[in-house]
Length: 349
Image: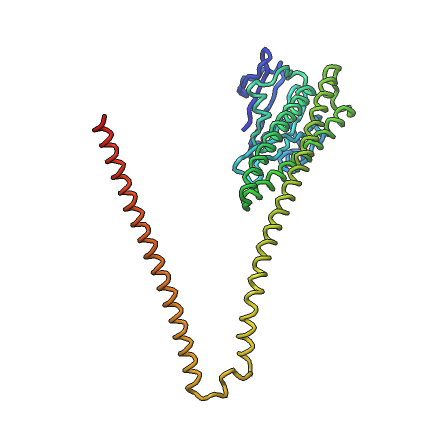
């Protein structure tokens, strides 16, 4: 979608293409562009196709260069958030093209940075000063980076609290997604830092004294965001390593128990496997009826032992039930005596 903005009394106002005031600077905002819209921008403003393809590449790094038809291309990476994505926090490139009195921003998706400009949430923005406009975009991106980094830290802390109760694959995957987001943020912030240094040293864009002071503040914010991203990345990596150690330790405990059970079961397994080979059995030399008698005697002994144990259990259960009945009767007698005593006390009163 292509939107046209012009600044009137310090406020951005949306204008139609037919009613554009040519005496004022124009901001062409192209977000979530389609193929037809990219062709329209390429033909109307004479933008090179390679530059448009670079802007629409999700992995393109920040840079600044000039075009053959007299325009300046600047690519800035800004943060985005999508809760339905596998990596919820990611970055996208924004292409900023300066040509005469027109500044064009191109992005393959929607983002909060350009939304804030269109909603007039950013102060002291001058559309007639295009270098300052670009620095404001980078500054707003830094603020969003810092806000998203704090949200990532809060989410990782809550996931860690859940993992202390029970470690599941879902929580580990969430931590890995946050770790990937932090790596993406670190790469994009360092790319923007190099862009700021090149903008200060290049002759393509000229800054005045006020803009240079503002650029120095943006550089400081960018450095702070890089340090925060590095710190959160190291902390999250250490947490994942610690929980993997806990998981491996729990696995070792389970394997130890299984090894003990295996050792206990080795003795009967050895006996059965030994007599399953070509060896003589204990009752092999006796008559045919003697093994049957021995097996019958063993069965009778086992039946007798089981009957004795059952009888003992029955007697103990009966005794326990009798004791319960006696205790209930005693309680009832005590209650009756207490009632009699209360009645006598009432009569005496």
